[in-house]
Amino acid sequence: MKRTTPALALLVSAGLLATACSGDEESAPSTTETVTVDSTIEETTTTRATTTTTSPPPSTTPDTVADVLRMPLTGEPVEDPTDIPDRPALVVKISNAPLSVVPQAGLNSADLVFEEVINDAATRLAVVFHSQDMDPVGPVRSGRNQDINLLLSLQRPLFAWSGGNPAVTRAIRDSDLVDLSAVNGSSGYYRRSGRRSPNNLYTDTEALWAQTTEDAGRPVPVFPYLREGEELSGEPATRVEVTMDSLDVVWEYDAESGGYYRTQNGQEHTTETEDDVEPVWAKNVVVILADYGQNPADGNPEAQVLGSNPVFVFSGGLVQEGEWLRFLPEDPFEFFDNFDDLNPLPLQPGRTWTEIPRNLDDVVSWEE
Image 1: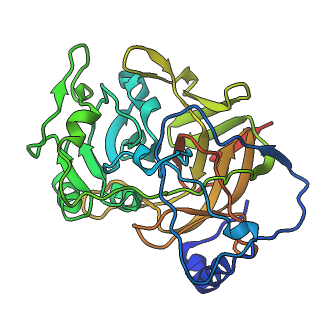
Image 2: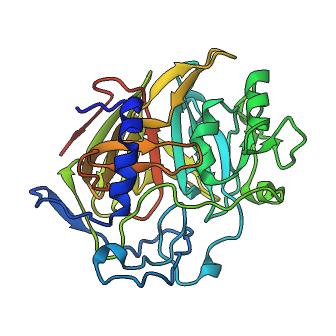
Image 3: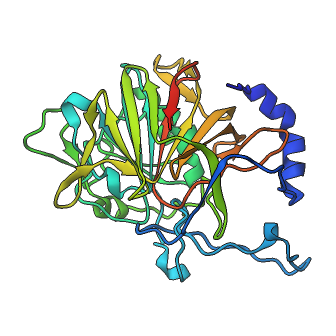
């Protein structure tokens, strides 16, 4: 497994930017399997508007063909800009202590889910909504300092959380996350019967979006998606295992639906919908290896999501291996096969679940 440090990312930045702007993405013939992806996938999502320029005129090469209009966070094609909700991304921090909170509410209505390691060797979810509404959502839990660098690429999103220690609270209030803390006067939260505190705080997206402030932004794409007619390539990988400290996560690919279904510690992971309970699933599973430091203010783990490290993109029953690259908190993640060839690693349109385990050997594996 190749490992690239953040220092290397900075050394290659000048060459990377120059090469990325050249439009030359031609690569050597590959012997890996390919899958043609139909971009009309049955999942509601939002898109981004493409930018046009008058000078110079576009060439006829495939690299410069205008992309279709897409939902920004899922890459789903849409027909009209008005199909994209005019609202910010909404991040809700949700507990993932399997024995006490499963099924959570709302995971299959999110556009993106990020899973982080937190201080008690458990994981917590940053669940990102934009294209769909959901009621209920929860249980809502506390934020972490690492959320700031991870989520600022969503362009000043609403941030719904149950509160945190003084150091985290100061950091989030001083950041460009729009603070909708349950202990800071934000409305829309309630305690749900049948659940024990602290895992009984719930909300819904309508109540949270109603509190949108003037300084809230609008999301832009944070991951690269296949263009129409492009093909996925990679090695077969239909069972994915990820070690998230004490949590053993397995994603099983279902060829009929084209989705990955999740278990954790040997138990099926389920989530509430508006009127039912169903298995947790995603169209893509991205595993971003991160170096975890320690926040000096409170001692909590802090994933380093700037710089570069290995990435594994699971989509369409295939795996693409490479390196992720990100310079600033506002930047999207970029995925490349390597920093010599700079071939991008795209995802299928659809909901993406991102695992962020520690950058250690053997934290991710797969089977055909």
